[in-house]
Length: 518
Image (cartoon, rainbow, N blue to C red; front, side):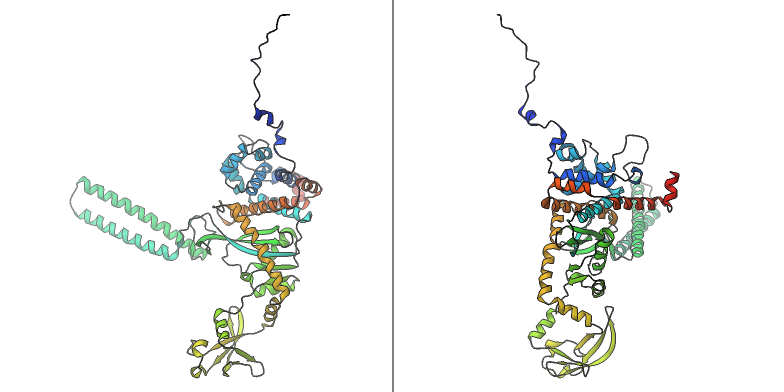
């Protein structure tokens, strides 16, 4: 039989890469990939919330439909979980990253959409991050019985150059002198009866310089008024909410991030922005935040010496919360004096102090106020004849000692903190409270935050804290188990939280009658 010749040129060869590609987009992501949990969690939280209660990108009715809050929230959480916070980079991730493509269902929002959504939906993003911590609490990953709190300064998205009243006044004085000089030069030119073009051009140039200087004076004056109104010594022009704080890199416009961590599971329970450069007044507020957001009241709270606020510690202990806070010991001066044999003993019977040289420090003032506390003041009148005076005091009036009134509780608390039991407990704080900040700084990269103003920076910190908790959760549990727990979890409290925020924004004070009408 004759051979049958068939033309096979229409069949295109299949490459090795095509043979290895998955058949569907769902196969791009493994069953144990954390992106599946992010997708399911956001859908679970927002499932029962009506669309009109959620803020969406875009205010115009016309044009293309806006992206749903679900997909944009998923992209932001995924980005901060993977140390990608730039809206431009997130746009690129949605086009080339297989996990992001799967998560976004092949949608590609541009960077302006992502950026505007993050800025305009502060309450929505914060609510989802808090709800994630509630899921961790309800699923047993957060215990909240023993916590550690700490603060860390994060540089604001602002230049190092700051404005202060003294600097503004200096610039104002210089600008006013320059204006006077230019005006006198104009007067001198006007007296000369010279109509040459060069002279006219000089006058026009001087007038432009005077106008620019007057505009600068007006701007500086408004900035000075703002500083006086805010009662601030200095501010960063790019972000008025940021405060000038002492950091390891020097004085910078920054925010103080207060973080509270579960000692047992190492999850972040709360992460709040403050504009205070010190932690002294934050202890009680950090503990109360746990009750407000997660309905948790810890049994024990650990903190470093920056939180050694006697009133707040006493208040928390009266509420049944054991506080383990380090108080500063004796100063280097007192330590040096003690090593040289200079000591003071209080004689309760005679109400005086007796020094190591046998001289008496007598009561000179019974009740004097220092740092919001009352002290008794004792002074030695015989220091001029003392052999160790130069090592003891440099005061011409003699050595002075202040004895705290009603300080029995504080003295007892300090003695308790010196015991071996509490010193062992305090050692754990450093490993628990400071570790998350190292991870957060790693996630943040060289530019920690990209938004300005306290409220917007809080959004970024919430997203970073959620990214940290997701990383921690990934290391302690398998995704299929998490998805099963998520199915059983009831986010009803989350729905009521969204409802209350929405009613407050709409100024609806009688929701029952409102929903009956609508």
